[in-house]
Amino acid sequence: MKALDRLLPLIQNETLKIWKKKRFFVIVLVLMIIIPIFTYAQHRIDETNKKNFKDWRNELVQQISEYQNTLSSDRIPEEWKRSRRIAVQQLQYYLDHDVNPNSPDGVTFTRSFLSNAVTLFFPLLVLALASDLVSGERTSGTIKMLLTRPVRRWKILFSKLVALSFYVSLTVVVSAVLCYLISGAVFGYNGWGMPVFTGFVIHGSSVESGFAHAIPQGLYLLMEAGLIWVSAMTVALLALMVSVLVRSTAASIVAMMAAVISGTILSNMASSWQSAKFIFSVNLQLTNYLAGSPPITGMTLGFSLVILACWGITSLIVSFFVFTKQDILN
Amino acid sequence: MRSLSSGNLWKIISISAVLSTLLLVAGFGFAVKDLLYPRGESFAGRANVPALPAGGKLSEGKNIEITAIGDSLTKGTGDASGEGYVKQVVALLKQKYPDTSVRLNNNLAVNGLKADRLQKLLESDKGYSFALKQSNIIVFTIGGNDLFQIASGTSPGKAADGLKLDKLKSGLPQGLNRLAQVVKRLHAINPNAQVVYVGLYNPFYDIPEYRGGSLQIQQWNEQAYALLHQYPNMTMVPTFDLFENAIGRYLSSDHFHPNHDGYAQIAARIVQSLE
Image (cartoon, rainbow over all chains, first blue to last red; front, side):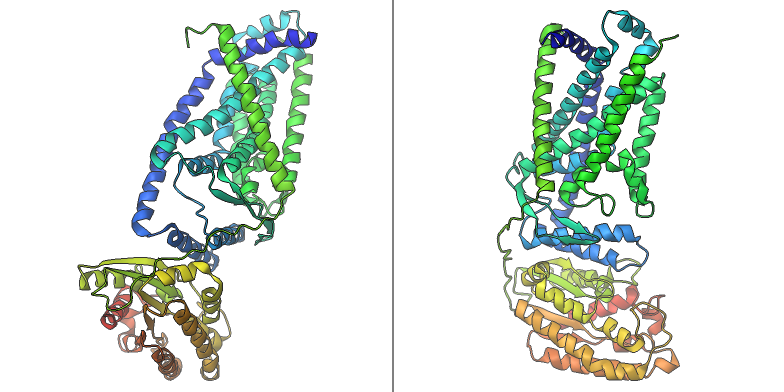
């Protein structure tokens, strides 16, 4: 209890420091701009579909047929065909059970926005928070004041970590809430109880639906947010480590962004390079497991979680080791 | 926010952050439990029953709903504008019946589709039967790939060398048998719609050694018509004559599929047959 008494003021201090840097305002502002744009785009798509199709079932049938057409083409890479085959079988499952997978409502929009944001957008927001956490203090020189206080160094880094986690959680929740509120104004605020299918088991390119089951979309959204939080936290831990290691904030942002972006590119090419699945950024898209389409053949949620945990724990160890041992020179 | 003291601000941030974290961790827990220990659970759902359109004369009904199924001809392969005959049929019907709403329900054609596969789709695919049940016009092409495969022993779309006309002759009954199954399923799904089958043509009429194939194609067309004749709502439009002397005008550069003008002629014939 006594240790906590001494830690709490430190955490409070770090939390307020991030708040005063107005990073969180920037994140909220970015969300307030981006979400209406996507909402409008989605609205236009819905309008077009409404004009062309009498019923969502017709639209779904057409989509399945188009996917089947790409499957018959010899020019399409095998990896794409595999994901298309999986998608066809899943859409067929929705159709067979008469459930609309893209019903136009706020919750559905939020669900698809979040799952699309998990590879690049959330890491970017997390980097905005985390990248200058330590390197920023170094640039401004405040690190000397911080470290000359009679507080153990690990406590300082730990309080930074806790404050960072606070904002990562807030970012995920605020994104979901804003997305729901903004898109709901256009699409309506319902869709919580709509059934969504999960638990498809993928073998190669065939989908086994024996374990597929329907869950309410609200719960699905919660699960999705939880998975996003885990991948965002991994990015945060790595960014913290880079921020400890690299002196310049700009360099630490660039390094992390390069890692995240190359991960998304690699996961598209991973069919020919299997070892890419050990890179953290290939594993960030945890929400795909929920939808039932692993990024690389044979990858499972357990595998990705272990990989992310390894990267996260390693970066924690490195951060604390370096931060407590390094000399602070000018 | 400026009015908040930093103590209060800290309380608000920390409490909401801790609550958010707990919520997210719970969500993560649910997700892991659900994904690592999935429990198969049957979801009954509802049966998707489309509203059936009225049968009878098209000019008397309020709307015309078209569903197209079949192979690359229905898909419109070879037409640089992407319209194929299906979209042109829709446009022509709009001209023919200006007071009626005409819409394409679905074009479910798949490149390279063969009759046996189509029959399976009609049997098991709920999407197909859903779309077909809604419509009062069904247009389809099928059989070309079956015959091509029978004649060449390879997959469709490959080079034309090595076609065996005698194989085509012996394989004809097999292909027609598949067509008969398709027609039967189609009638079972929607007995009221006007069904138009587009007859086959010989895309190799201008190659002397394959010119004889036209006779086999004609055999196919004749027997296909006999199959459709059993059902008063079904008919067939011929296309073989378009691709004989005018083959250069109507065939696309792949020497297999019609081009835009070729599809336009097919569309015109389909629309002529509908009333």
